Amino acid sequence: MANSYETGRLNLPFVGISTFGKRPYVEDWSLIEADVAVMGAPFDFGTQFRAGARFGPRAVREASTLFSFGHAGAYDHEDDCIYLPASVRIVDIGDADIVHTDTATSHANIATGVRAMLAAGALPVVIGGDHSVNIPIIEAFEGQGDIHILQIDAHLDFVDVRHGVRVGHGSPMRRAADKGYVTGLTQVGIRNVSSTAREGYEAARAMGADILSVRQARALGPKAVIARIPAGARVYVTIDIDGFCPSIAPGTGTPSHGGFLYYDVLEMLQEVARTHDIVGVDLVEVAPDYDHSGSTAILAAQVLLNFLGFIFHARGAR
Image 1 (cartoon, rainbow, N blue to C red):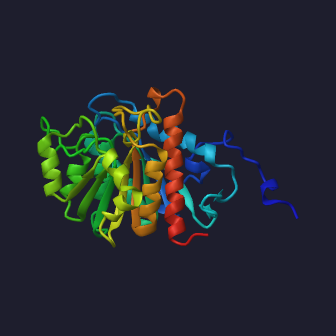
Image 2 (image 1 turned 45 degrees about the vertical axis):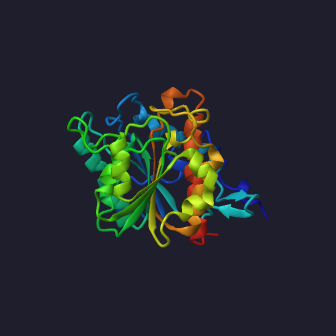
Image 3 (image 1 turned 30 degrees about the horizontal axis):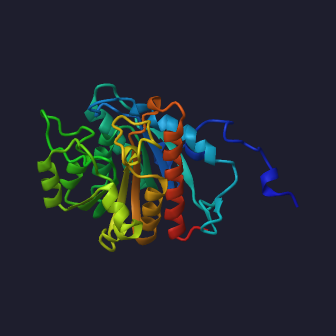
């Protein structure tokens, strides 16, 4: 009997169209039938320093093909299990439409995509874009029940209003905390000089934030960090690529040394997938032009694919 790897096209990673994970593309958002839907949010008007994250979705999609050899699932010898078998249906729904210089319309279009994914019963995965894209994503969760946010980031992102601006990439966690259905924040990796002033840290804690630096998180260990999230909470995970050290993720607009390494984050994600219901994910701030090796985008794709594997393994996908 022929091996399943030998039937049909080989479809190597460098062949074909770069959808996320080389999964099917669904252009009509009313026809999403999947367990996971991936959308790009190529918006970076919220940046305060180096722009370029608008090219993040394209770079992460291309990088994701490195892990996509056309056969279902990926065997992990360390865990002795197959992640993302064929029973886990993943689709790429393309990008939200971005209207240049128009933040309100662009954000509204991002929220529309997330609502479509939620209406279809798919787990929303959004690739940014700067961190302000989290604001319309969380707005789209209104009416979906209470959620707790796990943020992996170098920066607190808790600016309220600065020169009249309420929706920059320094403010998504403040806007999330304003929502009655966001019951708490676990903010991990926060370090060094931040975009948020001391008053912002005080406000964050007053509004239910649990803030840990990289060194504090390492001292606790991944399981103890995740144990701080209330039991039974439905968790939304937002990952800013600058939560990682720029020694492994230089391709971002606001790099901050002393960040997490790969397994620091991977083990937290594996634990939160094991212990909590994950309701949505975004990964933001990949700005590929600052990393000509492509390793930042590869890291982002690898983190997302592994996290999806952990989530659906916890849900019983085999």
